[in-house]
Amino acid sequence: MQRAPEAPLEAAVRDVQVWSYPLIFAQRVRLNFVQPLDPFAPRQETSAGAPVNTFGHQRRLSDPTLTVGVAPNVDTLYSVAWLDVRHNEFELHLPDFGDRYASFQVTLPDTTSPIVISQDVPGEPLPSLKIDKGRARLEKDTEEVRLRTNWRYVMIVGRILVDGTDERDLAAVHQLQDAIALTATPIAASAAPRLRDAELARSTRQAEIEDPATFALALAQVLDDADPDAVTDDLRRDIDRSRVQDVAQLPPAATRAIVDGLAQGWNDINRHVRSFGRLTNGWAINDIGTDFGDDHLLRAAVAHSQIFINPVSEALYPVCEVDATGEPLDGERHDYEITFAAGALPPVHAFWSLTMYHAQGLLVDNEIKRYAIGDRTPDLRFGDDGSLTIRLQNSRPPDDLNWLPAPSAPFRLMLRLYRPATTTWDPPAVVRVGATAQ
Image (cartoon, rainbow, N blue to C red; front, side):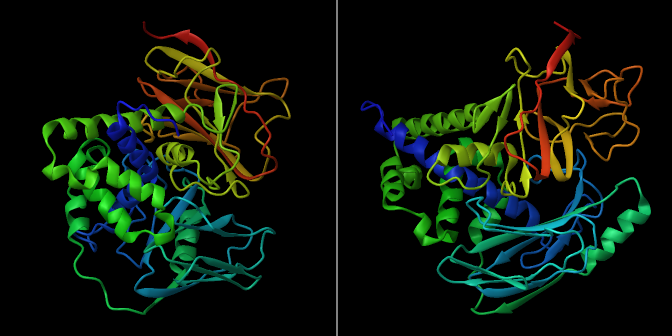
């Protein structure tokens, strides 16, 4: 990576920001879920939060009140557990889901995903899962999957398909969630009270991005919890050269340089969201899923827009922030449409959906409480030629059957293709059909 000789400090801070962004964001998600200041506090029904080493179950589909992560889906109920692997061994046994879609993804704090347990054939039993401490190793067979890891924390994300408008279907999924069996066997004494966790829980994600002292605190916790193999010599040199861990003792000029370096990293990440992966018709498609390798900027951009995505074999997540002309999507200025030609709906073996988000990745509140349209949306109206046109606008149209409400502000779209039949399919462009304000 070429660095300007006149600004080595800012460049080093920028590189540390890009490397650490996904891990600090993942840490923030963990804190939001486990709530270290009050872990047993009641959660809202849209939350899958729970104390560490315990499954939390979302009982109602996500809505705009859910703000613990970014880009939640409204297709499945989540069941989530954050596990402390340095002090426990874990075993997970799953119920019989029949022909209902269900997947259980194991994610690491660097947002990679070494395991997804799901049914290749509807109705087949799912294997058990064991997770314990050790040098990274993955073993699989039809009856058991075993993961060894030196990361302190591992997250398991369960997704179970549900019809959120059907109380009987919701109750059936609640029973399946309650039948998920997780056991923890202590292998070491618990660590001393995690003072950084408590301090970070009182902070904000934005402060971690912009404020040098908060960033340094979050980075220190990330490094303590990381697999030592993930912290390379080059990264250590960047951290030492950035001086972020000495920020409290630095003169104002050096602190200003750290602020500028953090801003550079954040700007690079934000810009890359619009261009990572394969670009087609205004959509950015990450064809490699969670296999980021050494591409730290890609990993950061994916975490920013869709943290903890599945590997591409399980799901594909095209993201769109611009229309067919390349202009940013903005529900205050324009109305839009997207048309899937006859026979050209998203190609999947399971199901697909198109979700509307604010530019920050949160669901959009609206009068009809519709946050996505997909192949299970009732009463969609197809054209005489078999095509499907979805209207994307802020104002309510006379016929709202195919309406996906947009905010009166910039927005982002995400397609979800669960068990994609191909990774080479190109979504159609989002077309501007009129301006509502100038």
